[in-house]
Length: 498
Image (cartoon, rainbow, N blue to C red; front, side):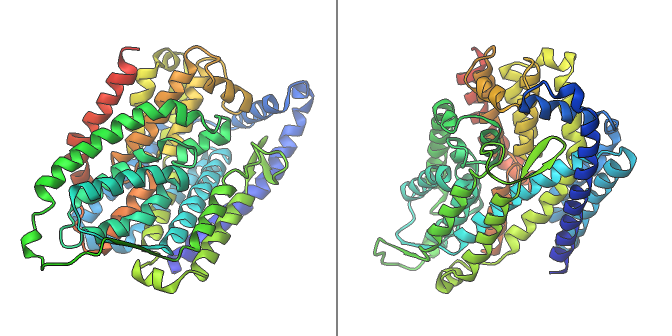
């Protein structure tokens, strides 16, 4: 609780700083009013951003060290110094984030970067926390014998559901039933394939499905664009994973079956806490309350841009109410606790705080003449993908979309330009956006930190007594030999020879 309180105080402090900075930014921007008042609202926002950016220098390369250090500690901590890491990761993550944020504020005099990182983090954690808590109050019990077909069916259903309630919602709703279904035989590969199919690739078809697609929708990508453009790649990847899982589960899924007592199954399906679907519906509807899409939605105005806060208030309120009024039997049956979301909250406050220099350096290079010359749908696929595996995939998506648009003299801050880019009104722009979208979602499954639900699923599995692979073990034993060839196949089929 002390650590949570510390983060709360930190967030409140930066929000206060945001309010103060807003006043200064508006004063500075008013000086420039005469030079930009002839432009439309979106161009005004972009120019105001440029004016503000001119007041500070770029982040030095060495400032990437805290981010790299955090990634290395996430990878090695649970393996080599588990006790120390488990008790101190909140302090380490927050401390490294503060180090980078303070350098931005006091050395670079850059308030813009930390404010945007804070806004993105609040949007990120509000969505994940509300979906995690609301889904945790729904207990699904399946009294059925675990077979490869039953497991594959549940994974495919989870992949479909993830497009309706998000990869986080689907993961939290189904990971415990999946573990219970395989009780006595549950192994690490069950959880890894769940992360691959439900927590990541499954949510490729709607903006609700995965955070990067949600951010793209907020920037102007039409809602059904992801369904029409991502579906073929989604189908191929999901089919390949389902076949591989079926083969592995047939071979290893009955390894401990002889040790189990004979059990009579009723094949019944029961659900408790169905009232929480109402809370999930509120969360889904609230995602559309963005001031950049709907002008009537109240917003925090800063640096010529609008930041949502009504949506986040609704989500945090739903998180509280869905837990407060949840079915206690459902919570108990799910062995619900806050440790998984606590771990995600601290780890990702460190990631969002320290990855600013890395994203800035990559983004600046991509927007440079040298970088722009390298931008193709192939480099966008692999560039977005590789970084989505080690950075959070949501800001990575935005950075590469901004770079791709900048290479064609378009601005990501202009909603109409984003919409035109998605509708292929620039040179091969829809194809480039498809490469960014598919890669950011698919490659998010490459590591535990590529996407928020990955860490939560891992934490729940470990609390259930399942021995999960380390960070490097996950990559070496599963991502590289299983997932990477599928991602390569997707590239060959849809991007390589086009």
